[in-house]
Structures are given as C-alpha cells and as structure tokens.
Length: 489
Image 1 (cartoon, helix red, strand yellow):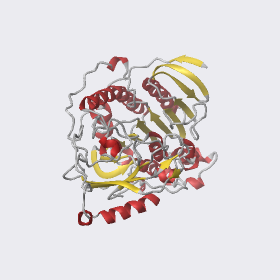
Image 2: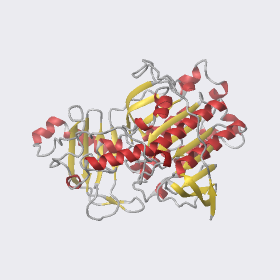
Image 3: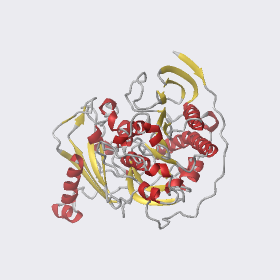
Image 4: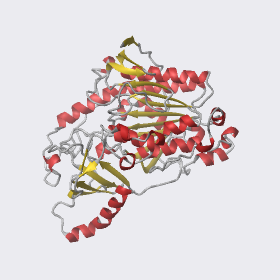
C-alpha cells in the first residue's frame, strides 16, 4: 500500500470577544421556514422543492442558497472539557448556541454515530453495538438526502466501528476514512487504502480544508462530516501538547463514590479511582487542544471564502466518558457523565449567531432533522429526533444500551428515562450478537431512580430497599410504563 507523508499547516489564531448573552436572549427559536420568510432570505432557497422533487442535473440548481453544513463529531468527549476548546467555544458557543442539556441516546460510538446520521434511536436504526455497522440502512442517512439534493459531500476521519476500511462510505463524494489511530494511521482516501504519516487530527484538518477550498470554484453547497479520533483512548496528544499542564481537578462527589451498596453489581465491582479519573481527564484535554486548533482553522477558512454566515456548524461528542464516577472509567453506563456531551451550533444566517444558551433537552438524534430542516429537505424515512431550529421542547429522553455477547460480567443491557429533574433506569436480561440481533427473556434485573435536583451526582438510588408505597410516591409505575412505550416507539 502507498505511504504518504502529510505535513500539518499551522492555523492562524484569532481572538474573539465574548458575547454578553450567557443566558437566553428572549427570542423564540427561528426555524428555516421563519428564516426564509424574512428579509434576509435568499430568494432561490424559498423555491427549493422537497427531496422527492430534487433529482438529476437540476439538483445543483435547486440547492442554490441552501446553507453549507459542517458537522464535527469528536470521540468519547464528555462535558466539562471546555478548557481545551477556547477557540471552539468562542466561535460556536459565544457566537452561536450552547446546549446545556446535550445527550447521546446510546453512549457507544457506532450506535451514537448511526443516530447522528439517521435521526433515529438505536432500536430503530439497528446498530445496537460496535460490531453491527452493517445494520444501518444507508438510504435513511442525512448524507444520502443531502447528496440527492445536490450537495457536495465529504467525510474526514472516523466513520463507523466495524466498517471495513477498504469499503467506501456511502453517499460521500469525497472521503478520507481513518482506521482509528493517532499517528501514522491507515486511511482509505477516495478508494485508495494507504498509510499517511503524521498526527491524524492534523490530517483530518488539512483534508477538510482542502474540501472547503473547492467551494471557491464549485458553486454547490457542501456537507462536511469531520470526525477526529480525539479524545478516544489511548488519548495520544500531539507532540507539542504532550506536556501541557491542565487545570487541577479534585473530582466530584461521584468520584469514586465509596459506598455503592445501592448500585448494580458491575458498579459495585468497579475499581476506578480519583487518580485514574485525573489521568484520563488530563489525557483527553491534551488531545482536544489539537481539535480546537482544527476548528479555528475551519472558521478562518470559512471567513476567507465568504461562507461563514451561511454555514450551519454543529459540534458534538459521540458519547461522554466517566472520570472515575462510581468507580467507572469508561462509557456505556446510564450515569450522566457517559451520555451527557458538549453540544454547540452556529448558523448566523439562520438566526443562530448571537451567543445564546439553550436549556432544552437535546440529543444526537436531533442533528439529522436539524440539518434537513435548514436545507429545506423532507426525509422519506421516519425520524425520532426533532429540528433544533424549531420550538420543540421534550420533557424527557430515552437513552439505551445493549450488552454484546453472553459472557458473564460487564454492563448489562439497560434503558433509561432521562429528564432534567429525575432519571429512571431498568437493566434487562437481554444481549445482542454481532449483527445487533437481540435475544433473552427481557426480564428486569435491576432498577435505579435518582432525584437529579437534590442528587445531581446520582449517589442515592431511591429504589434500593424501597417499599411499594415508596415506589408509588416516586411515580415509578408511570415512569416504567412510559419507558416501556419509548423502547418500542
């Protein structure tokens, strides 16, 4: 195979002043329809037909005036990592929208990314574990809809776990597909498998910048899916950041939570310590410094191209990560550090450039509906998420995870009702095989309920030794019924 050496260009660093709005600005969310109805709308965009009416050579013409889409998905990045992202925050949060209650609906890479692509829960798109990428119906993905509607599409970085590197990712016109690693990795570049020497975050950055540069001569709107390996293990930083000091961290009450008698067996047996959490946190932050440099380079490029205002930018982690919470130093669990993620959005031309804080419960399943809403495309397949450009405001979210294989131990299959003030979780006698097929009795094996107002770190499981009267007072029967309905919706 070919071996290529790719040097990394240093991006310019621009200092951005913070907008004053660290809270709501009082304006209702602006949908694409409302935006197009205003004076700032591009006339061509108001006449764009829906997806079913866009085809062939006319698609590029119909796409005129639609926003460009830059979707950045990091790997295993939890909340509370903003220290490493000052330039990203200055652009996408301070001059865009910061979602304070951002979640993923399955805290595992391939299921989460499939939810990003499809706007669907894992129980609907079928990718229930990291081995079942082939279960995703590629005709339901946002990249398919955008490609069909005349968008130029590109993928740069990690795609789906268990996807064969030699296989082209469907519906991406241009791609540099990464076999996950930090240095001197294997790539599939537009159909050619090769080794490219260098730090992979830089390679992702440079390939993306080359893709953006083509906008100077290609009039089509574009969609760039950009997904560096950071901050996934082994969390290898760029050489210049290897010894960067990070802020001290003394943990939080859930780290490591010495009394876990009210927790499931796998948490009772967890051995993660505060020292372990500090190590993981420091390593993650150092890898994210290079992501921050890349995001700044993207902003500079968009500004130089004159496309900063009409580019919808979305940034999210594919799942969170525990820093020793409840003794756990991984993902895949129903506790908040594993499914809560950083989530930012910017689209000045669509009314999302003022620097606001959005306190709605939002999730990765909302990304595809948001992109299609902005582009004026109606999807043919059903979606579980809702456009973030609308005023939709859910009162809770279904979060779910499946155990792969039947080996003893590990995290059991679970699902959870997650609201701002409470969380109810059930663990089941269910497993999946490599195809994502589910088997088992479905019997509920363990339950947890947390009062997130008074117990935000989930220290006290109120169902531990609870009586029937206690459960009634907590509203458990209604929560269990709603959770059961959500799991099949």
